[in-house]
Amino acid sequence: MENINLSSKKKWVKVKLGDLASTITKGSTPTTYGFNYLDKGIPFIKIENIENDKISHRSIKQFISNEAHEYQSRSQLQEGDILFSIAGTIGKTCIVTKNDIPSNTNQALSIIRGTKKYLLPKFLKLQFLSILSTTVKKKARGGAMSNISLNDLEKMDILLPSIQEQNRIIEKIEELFSDLDKATEELKKTQEQLKIYRQAVLKDAFEGKLTEEWRRNNNTSSADLLFRKVFNKRKEIYRKQQFKKCKKLKPPEKFYKKENITEIKLDGIPDTWKQIKFIDLIKYEENTIKRGPFGSAIKKVYFVLKGYKVYEQKNAINDDVMLGNYFIDEAKYKELERFSVKGGDYIISCSGTIGRISKLPKDASIGVINQALLKIVLDEDLFIDRLFLYLFRAEFFQRKILKETRGSAMKNISSVEDIKNINVLLPSKKEQEQMLQEIESRLSVCDKLEETVQQSLEKIKYLRQSILKKAFEGNLVPQNPEDEPAEKLLERIKQEKEKHKYNNKKRKKR
Image (cartoon, rainbow, N blue to C red; front, side, top):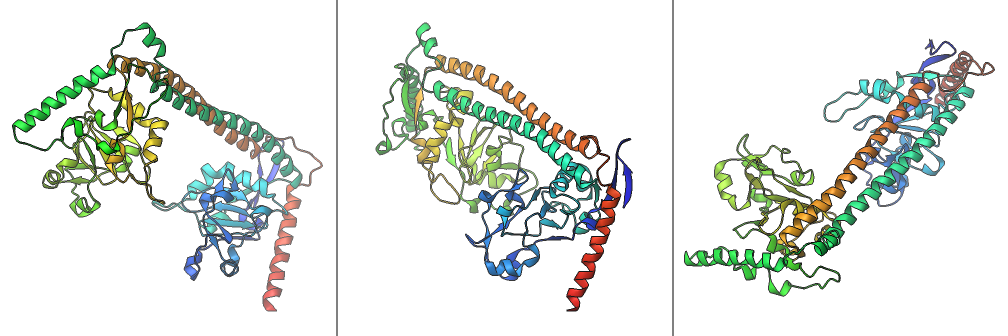
């Protein structure tokens, strides 16, 4: 322990956290002792249940019995305890309130108890938030899962002013943070409004509302002519196939099951548009809409260091072809060639996170899809590629895909037929070009606004740290000469600690 000069006006003391707290401990996993998790009972708190520096009860998924709670007595939480995460995500912190009792926790959370007489829990929590990016993270060790020890916490230097000054600092920080919270809330509302606006733009575009004025001022041909032109080409391809006595492609008329066709009459849809099926948008070639092979077809034993890439669900979800490092050799690729993909093809996630789509860039590696993906080759003679991406990502279209999902814990599109038979509205090619222009001009404004909002949110984060830094340098609130000196407070802490040790010894003897 030592005195430190924080400014020309102020003198605080620095003390080890272990010398302030009566106990610093951590929880344990109940299953280690033969207890099972329950659907209800005593809440079992984990790191992910700490949100915005509070315990979020709505996020708690695991509970334990009273018996398990009693058995794990050292990790029973008490009002005023400070929780501080020491494994995985380091530095999440909160104060346990009356509403959080009873509850228990695991070994990823440390429990700091007995500081409120000399160091107010709120003051310590704010100090943790202030030193998180430097002192705590420097002590973190480990590979994939970083962690700090209880011994590291005990040796951590804590700044100790008088109780009166602690209260003033807390009050000032909460006042300033309250203003920042309001600003953050407004910015997040703006983000949500922009999301809603984006979806409204897409909905209006694919219902013909964005190009309504354009149609009045321009003579546009019917989409039926475009469809017939493409359809006749397909018929010619089929005839040539028949001439060669090759029966791989179905006749264009039988792209989808007739019994599944349900025409939905929509009011207000332009007369020049045509209602078609999703399968009509697919290129008329073999294997242009294909779900990935069964899991047994692509096992880890087939993977090699270099070769043909195996595309995974994360490539579609993150719209990033560079993710993943699984490859197969040429022999395996030829065996799975009907599931192959190349630059310009689309991949769609079909399991868990459903409906995310990504277009492979022209220079994408040739490879195959795994069982969690669906591949599509778009007929760009019928539909513009960028417009197709907007259609597929639109909320109203996503609902059509999700409506057909089956399963509970893991959602899954059970059949390619579910997607093939979705109704799609087709405008003429010229109107598609205009639609794309209208969409992108509006969404580019959204992009700029979102960028500005994100920059403001980052600035608020910086301001929070700036306020905390100023507070723990002793420069946020004025000093009051009538406050009890920190040295006297420290002396009382020593006396209390000695008394606590003496009482513990007496209890042990009994």
